[in-house]
Length: 260
Image (cartoon, rainbow, N blue to C red; front, side, top):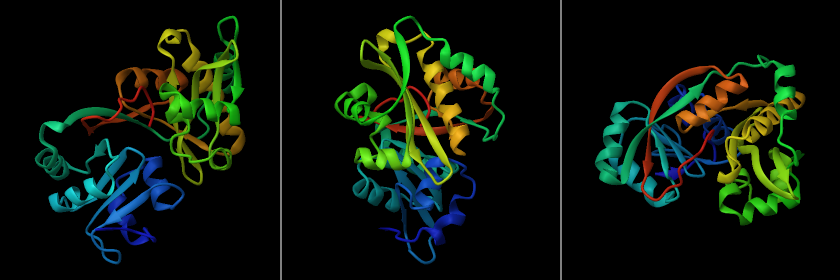
């Protein structure tokens, strides 16, 4: 198994995937594609951060090698039940089968006035701010907000490839929506809110503002939900459910609150 400098030969193995993270890997924008053979791959994985999307022929030896080469993999997405069986054989009780929620990628379907109203519906003392270097540094040093920037090693790379909106109260971020990753024409939205500020409409407000910013920039704000709460938030923002699908959370990985 090896990482592919040119993931093109493996692209056909991922034809069932429409995920932004897979696109990022195939475009070499972010992440990495691993395969059993660089020229004529039969088995492959698109890995970005803690996510690994498995494709092609299910192969236990390949998955064991992948575990060594990409140890940060905490969420495994199987392409078919063959891969589910291999994951369960390889990880045993360390891998918990969960259900994630995919949403349709529908361009320009947003009710912009509705989103503007959501963005302006903040509690007293809170306001929205586009993520800058200070917010990037805050997210780097605070676990609850780290996924806003975790896939961008520097602020310069974050500013070039990503964007985000934070809710500020008393000079400090308390909620935010940002790109967990970015392909050439899409971002994968990640939203996190401090527990004591949840259920106050903050996630809705910053999510709405981020969608509006994406519309201005010609980017598609993709959403993939880790749990029912994230799925409900997506639907409030105007997304439409496409399907439920299985994934495996490996022991020790972080639970996601929402998209990505």
